[in-house]
Image (cartoon, rainbow, N blue to C red):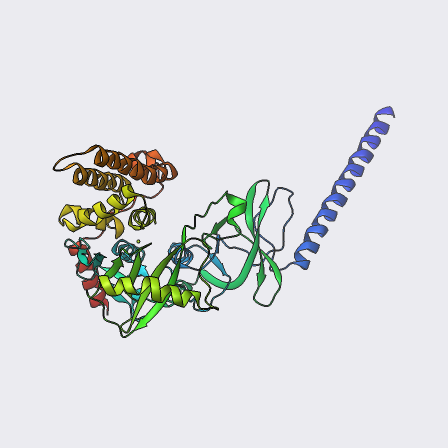
Length: 449
């Protein structure tokens, strides 16, 4: 009798426990169904730390790219070709009107070929660029890109930046996995120190959120988002004023023209078959007023007489400092030494031009050529007979050159500059295509056509 009572008691407790477990399971299942009912299509597949399934726009996105400029569009196309689901959010999808990014160096064109984007410079009236011409004090020096080992199609390209951007956006949008959307990203969405997505305002003013495992910010050096990721310091020693000259013939066809004027360089290059861009560098952060005529007066009285009389990133910044006029005698000697060094021709010009054109990406070459210019300048001062004054100017010239190049080395990193092979990389850049490679590629495209 006692055994029967114990059996009944244990059976009762087991049944009660089973009922409690069943009730708990059904209650949790009902909650999950309610959440799915409220957000049938917008529930993210990724599980978050708190276990909540969150409503987001664009579930299934692999990568969010903020900005559809050159970098954002090229990245979207590359990831889309790789089968990724890419969402690009751009503040304004209309054709931009900007004066930056109008001259694509040959190294950049080789990258377009590598990415399959070379047709983006077609049908926009782009102009071939084969090198530069330097002008100083009535003398000139023609510096051609070292393109001998490449197919004849390889050269620089100059164009309206907006037309090029639109072609890249259109090319990226042809892929089924790439979606371009107009919207203004206001903040990054973070959780436990990890970026989960972005918050943005759509074209019609809606506040929305988008989530993805990876978010890439490509919206320029003045990005508001960059401040949340790092401590950017944008150096603005001067501003460019852009003019378009119509039906104007430059002295050297298919070349960019750099006039070493006072106080800073002036650039000319074609951007279409009928237009030439003139970029006037105005030192300082405050521009002459356009409204009251100060700008027009500055261009007429300071800039115009010099082109008539004389009739591009790390390296460009260094060259700007060298080419800019200065009251310092050592800087003047450095400027003249640079012009004379490039005028020597041969490896003295092809080396720096290969760096400038992106055909030689080795940072060490920049350092070597930079100090070669400095030593050449000192040699000009000390020969045929040195004097204490010339020796002093030569020492200051070396110090001035060091003051330009050493901050660049520090910013880039010593390992990156001198020992790039020791830097780990996920993808090693392949060698640039030589003549036979591009000819085969062109031939295969002709056969397909």
